[in-house]
Amino acid sequence: MTTEEVLLRLHIKVLVLTLSLTIAGSAFGSGYSLFEQGAKATAMGGAFAATADDPSAIFYNVAGIAQQRRLTILAGATFITFANQFTGDPNDEFTSGQSGQYHRHAFVPPNAYVTVPIGTNLTFGVGLMTPFGLRTDWDDPWIGRFVSRDANVKLVSIEPALAWQSADGRFALGGGAEYRRARIVLQRNNPLPGSGVNPFTGRIADAANIYLSSDWKTAWGWNLGVLWKASDRFRVGASYRASTDIDFTGDATFTQIPTGNAQIDALVKSQLPPNQGIATTLPFPATAIVGFALTTIPNTDLEFDVTHQSWGEFKNLDVAFSTTPQVNLHSAQDWEDTNSYRIGVNHRATPEWDVRFGLVYDENPEPVKAVSPLLPDSDREGVTLGAGYHAGPWIVDGTVFVLHFKTRSTNGQSQDFVNGTYKTNATLFSLNLGYRF
Image (cartoon, rainbow, N blue to C red; front, side, top):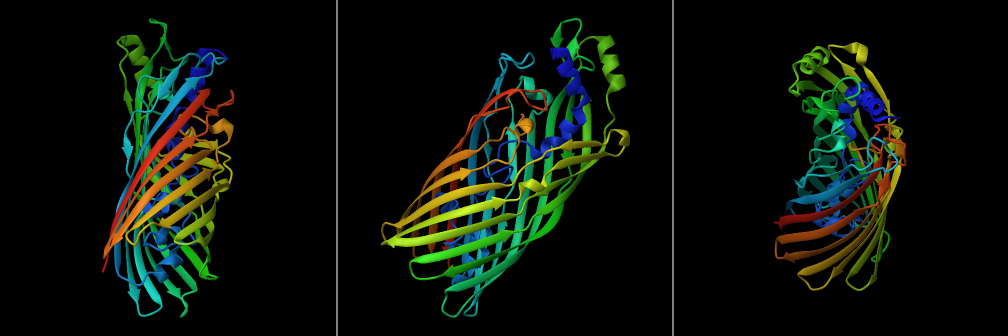
């Protein structure tokens, strides 16, 4: 396939690629999920479903708040820095010799929790979490700008929850309703109509900038959790967070980029789509976690968790246009369900200090054909190290999380015609401050 043919196909696909921002970028659980919702849990590699002994249990296993018998406030954030490098396929006429990289920036999802004991067996809690989201920002110029330059997906959840434990404290059950609010933004360029090449310069030229911004949209979900302390040394925890779909509506804005040639600019202007409304739906998968915790060494807890996410329900992306419905689009995604494996250790070194360690392995849901600048996803491996300080009513937890994405190649199968290899690494810093009354 020649460069001109590739660019022609890119031009034809411009609208579907524009709206594919909803699956863009590199997140830090499988797909576009974020699993870092508490510094202590993150320090244990996210293996926390059977421990669940701080207010972030509202996210990891809501049953765990039942064992927390003091009014507690906990708040913090995770500071995420990441780098992605693209190297073009040397056997691909379009991308051979090309490269690209992310513009360096920090992505900061927050979290906050309050737990309130009620009587002797109940605990009420409220959590603010960011279980999904991403930010990608590619440096210009680069060959993938016709697929994605900058994408931003924001989602925040608020969950009121209630948990009960048995009189002996060995069994707990909890649940909550989850209110989700999300918004998506994308910016990318479109090549000149036809071949994409300016006939007067012989170079690929940009015809327009495309900016899509959705309104804030909402949906409701729910979650349940159970916690069983079989003995003083062995605990089992499980949680389930239901899937939700969010229906997005917004505006697509097309801004012409002058080439300096009046004839070409007039042609581009005549073919530029009008600004118009759009609508699409994005699925957020169900998440099921099972965890097993052991205390076999004095003052040391070891936990192993398996997390399953139902990404397989994301089969297609359908987009409707308000002004030109004849270009309504259907794009196959064909994602697969994923499993994540997490091991965490918490050692109580002194009455005031804990030290923590964790290992993570996440599967990615994306088939090879869908690997692109929008989502250069891959399986990932991570190591966490953290510490916790608790003296009197105060709680301070901090974590460093180093995450390596396995090198991912399109193997010449990219449906976006940007074939090459992606290498991604991320460093995450989590911090939570808390107070027990």
